[in-house]
Length: 129
Image 1 (tube, rainbow, N blue to C red):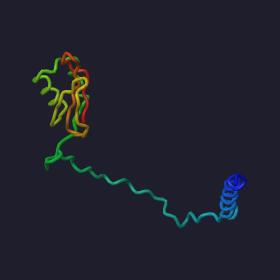
Image 2 (tube, rainbow, N blue to C red):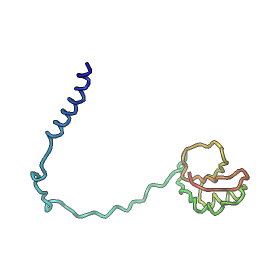
Image 3 (cartoon, rainbow, N blue to C red):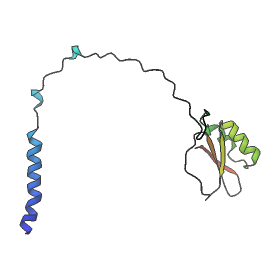
Image 4 (cartoon, helix red, strand yellow):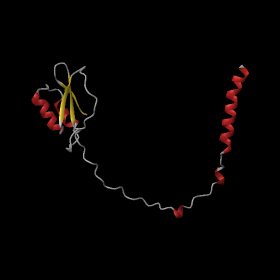
């Protein structure tokens, strides 16, 4: 029984090697391609604007927020006025503050600004999503 079990992997290895060698082609046997029959001109890429992004659940087109613009508010207390100013600077439709350990939804909204705050409610980071 053990000889049979040892022989099976050898048999499969031999069969695989035989099948692999059966389909080999010598490179010298391949005829060169007729490059005169091939059109090698490249077309210029099409200048197509991507479709506008839409706010989920609405038909309104919105821009993606710019987190770099909102990073100017890092270090400030996240009062209602500062949060609104950061949202406006980022061009975001939505804004939310995220406290350490706070549970948040993971859906991505390209037009939402996320402001990370610390325990003292000071803005520590800004990102879109």
